[in-house]
Image (cartoon, one colour):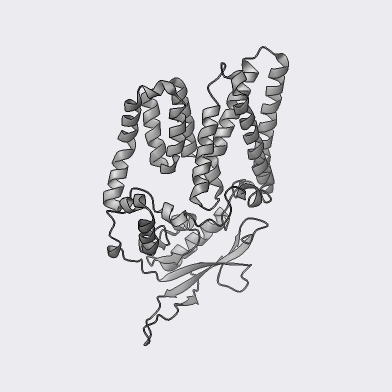
Length: 371
């Protein structure tokens, strides 16, 4: 959401042709997500009035983002987040079609509403030549959203729904500009009536998924669109009970950890928190890309030590009857629609007499706080 906010603010700064605001907002946008550089580049290049002040724009942007990049490069060993290595080329779905194939069926109204609003945005951009004198350019913001879509698509990342947000937010902004121009500036009653009707229709479509969710359960248990393996309340329960059980002992997991870690108040070891598990991926990235080789120049992977976990939190599909753990509710009509987490004692593999590592052993844990 912060990326969308910064993108809209940058579009406003470009319309105002204000180099300082444009530069500062560009710096914030890059600080939030480095891949958003394509959004900033398109919007700035589409504003010729800022070209003459490019030094001011670049200087303000650098003043915001450079201190963090330098600190991260020297202290953390990487200016670019490790998520680029973790997620690139490891998609579990096709980004171009996943919005309809993966999210379309379980979240029909939400995805349908986004697509309809996006279509109105494309129509606004296509007809910009007729209403451009009444409002700022909707074409540049759509091109910025399209450029971001192309970058994310090319990286081969998993099609998480939030990766679509900048693109569809750009289309929504273009739709807003076009409808506002037609509805308030044109001295044609029928055009104003049509614009108001379309506005009302888009607002109704947007409200439907929220209304459905509120009707099913109030207060809301989850967002109208989600990709998690469990509901937030289920993750809260898991986190609290895991924390009460493990204390200060680290827990290893290969699944989702955000809400669990928040309520657990314990150490969760996964690819995002345990950098030692990324050594092979980082070294491979160094070999394949000069940019990533430069990015990890200050990182000594030989000094990374893995987090020694005493427990494992595993997720398996199915209801998990008789298993000491927690039932989870995922996305309907998918393989993760129902499953369960189990907390297990984790014993690292021991080296056998033949020099090979035996398989790690796990045992179910008696929870200190049952459901």
